[in-house]
Length: 120
Length: 110
Image (cartoon, rainbow over all chains, first blue to last red; front, side, top):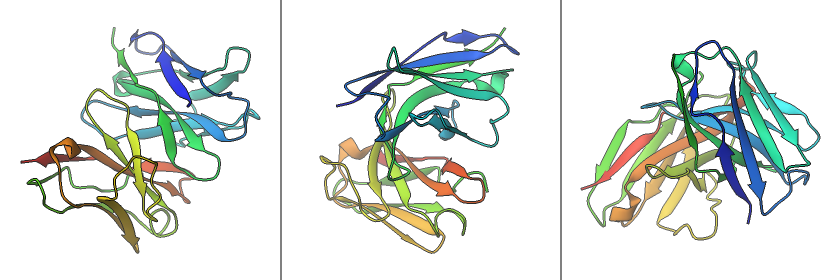
């Protein structure tokens, strides 16, 4: 069973870059079964899809965030990462890593999530 | 439309049937499968069921999903206290070329 765990700084200053890593256990990010992605939930709001990446390295991003987002794979560590640049208070949220099935748009496995606050 | 529309809250008593709606458009719900997630506070969201009733093992058949036109619904029969959670709908949007979620519905078991 695949297990996901987010890690990274909990506090980021405005205008800086938010960086998170998702460590995958129980499966390989080099398999073609899943996309590897990120979803966030600002306090009091709904979930928002950020993007996901396939083992080939091809990434897909939410158009509203595309100019600021990079998702990348590190196959040597079986991890994938999220970088969100030029953050503001509006980027304060719980960030989840999750897998999307290759054959559908369902996110079937989620990490526990990590709260990231943007504040000076 | 960048977000699907859900009622912010719903409630029911144990044993009751409750439905939660999810409204969208021709570019998302009408043409794509809708997925429902159950989210208990402090835990990871969990895939619950789809609009074509695909469900992971372990999800009881008290939960059912359906859609008609640009709207989808999650129905819970025989409501139990452990069903108290937030429920989110999601679908691919052909216009936005991305996944969109609803704002979430907080279900309270009275």
